Each structure stands twice: as structure tokens, then as C-alpha cells.
Image (cartoon, rainbow, N blue to C red; front, side):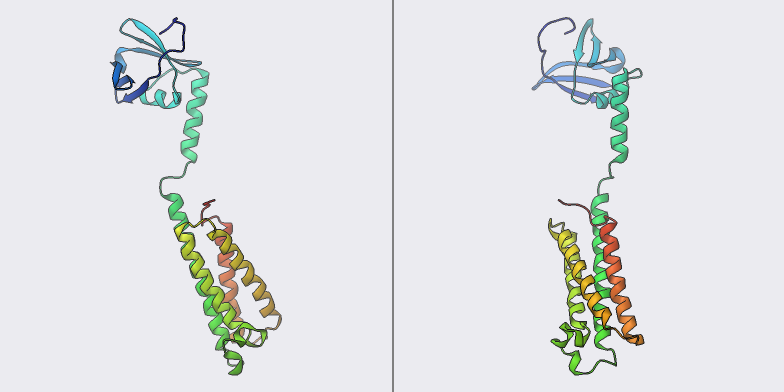
Length: 226
């Protein structure tokens, strides 16, 4: 109560429509129509005049209470609090937006893996590549132009995209490592590349997949779970 010593009492504040209710446990301390009481913002809480008595109400969310009961005049402190609360709400992502962004990023990352996978198969079907170099073992080496290594890299990217969609904590790190490995592998393969049309098409698919994967990571579309 206004002017009384002591810490006061802990209450729960309910502001619903035109009603203001104070509860202490299950007991209703007071309930009024907002239009019938006087309430003013102070530097520390609110001064409330109801039924001939006046008390000071200090809350954990002054700005929220002020919005609910529609205080027209606010102290400079309250004005700052309400402005800060509005800025925080404006900057918050709408519900589900982060999940949607992460889902789209995972899909695009999987498509990047498909590009790398396709490029690997295109390398294998290059007519300038001998039949012996089209084997799985040779496909992991420079003689086979690393075609099978790129196929594996594309499959790994697709698998990582699935794990990313699940929101696993280490999935983003796995995506980064997969792309780093593919970049290094692409550099080795490009050193021995010849200007045949089929090879250039295959390397174009692989490079496109790597670029798309890197773009997804840098765009932050996969979200941050850690």
C-alpha cells in the first residue's frame, strides 16, 4: 500500500480486456474494471488508485502491463521500456520461420549433392576414359578422374542434407567438412583435366554443386542449432 513500510506482497497480475485482477495464490486480492480505477506509470512500477485506496504495483513486465491496460501517459522510463519491447518483437522471427528456412536450406543442399553426383557419373561416361579407368577402384584415383570419389561426395552431401533437416547439432560441421573435401578433390581433378567437352560438362556440374552448397552455408539458411 502507498506509504506503508515493508516489502509488500507478491501477487499475480492478470490483465484481460477491460479487467485488471490481482491474485495471491488462489485468493483474489482485487479485481476492477480498468475504466473505474486510476493508474499512472512511475519510475518504478505503477501507482494504482482503486476503491479509495492507493497502492504501488511493481511488475516483471511493466511494458506488457502498460500495453494491456492501455496507459496513455507514461514516464520516460516506461516509454523506453515499451519502445524496447516493440523493437524486440519487430526483430523476432515469426513462429516457424527458422524451421522453414532450415528446411529450404537442407533441400537446396541436397540438390547441390545431386549436381556433384551427376558430375561424377558424367566423368565416368566420358568417351575418352578407357574401360579400365571406369572401375570403382580407378574412380577413386587420378587415372579415373576421381569419378567415383565425386559420386561418393554427392551421396555424402545428400546424407548430410537429411541430417541437417533433422536439426542435429554436428550436422553443419559435417556439411562444412564435406564441402572442404570436395573443393580439394575438385582442385586435384581439375589439374589433370583436358578440354574435352564431356569433361567440361561434368566438371561444370560438380563446380555448380560445390558453389550452391557453399552459398547455402554462407547464407545461413541451415539455421544454427548450437
